Length: 263
Image 1 (cartoon, rainbow, N blue to C red):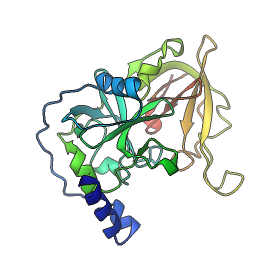
Image 2 (cartoon, rainbow, N blue to C red):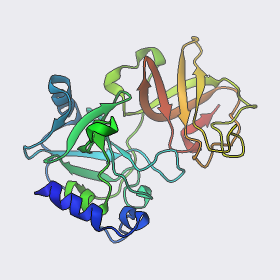
Image 3 (cartoon, helix red, strand yellow):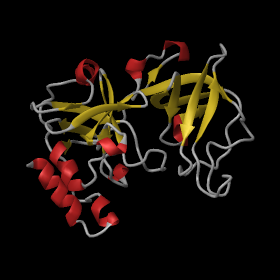
C-alpha cells in the first residue's frame, strides 16, 4: 500500500523541480525514542545482505554533512555514538532543513538498507535494472514518512585518527586526519570545474594526501563543488571529512574548505 502511495506521488508531480523541492515550513518535532543503533543496523546487512525492514525500528542520530557547497548532493550522513549511515534523500538544498548538528530520527519500517563504496545506505529499495541496492526517497512527502526532524545543534566532534588505524567500521563517520601534505599543493585544484576539465563538464578528482610516515589517503571533491577550482594548499594541513572507501583505498570527503586547517 505504501509503495503504491509513493508511486502516486511520483507520477502526480508536474515537474522535476516541483518534485524535488524541500518544504521551508517543516517544523521541529519531538523525536521518538531510538531503539536501534547504527552498529546494530549494520548487522542486518552483514547477516543477510540487502534488507527491507518490516519491524518498528527507530534510528536516532545527528546530521554531519551539508550540501551547501555542492560537494554532497541529494544525500546526508547521520551519525550516532556507534557509527554512521548515509540517507539517500533525493532532495536539493538539504542544508536549509537538515543542517549539520540537526537531530533526526529515521523510522525504518519500509526502508531498505544496502551498501555502496563501503558506506551503509538507507532509502527505498533499488530497482534491479539500476544496479544500486538503495534508491533515493525522492520527494518531501516520502521523506516525511520516514524522517522526523528534531532540534538544531552542533555537529558531532570528529574522531581524530591515524591513517594506519582506519577501519571499515568507521566508513560514513566524521574523521579527522592531521599532519597531511597534498600532492600538487600550490599548483593543482581540488577538482575540475567546467573551465578546467578536458571536455567542458565539471569532473571530480581524488587528491592524494600523505602523512608524515608516508601513508596516503585520498581526498575526493566533486567538480560541482563551489571550491572545485580553488588551488590546493601547501604545507602541513589537518583534514576533517566523511570517511569513504573505494576498493582498498580510504577517502575523505569534506563539506567545505573550513574542514581544512592549515598549520
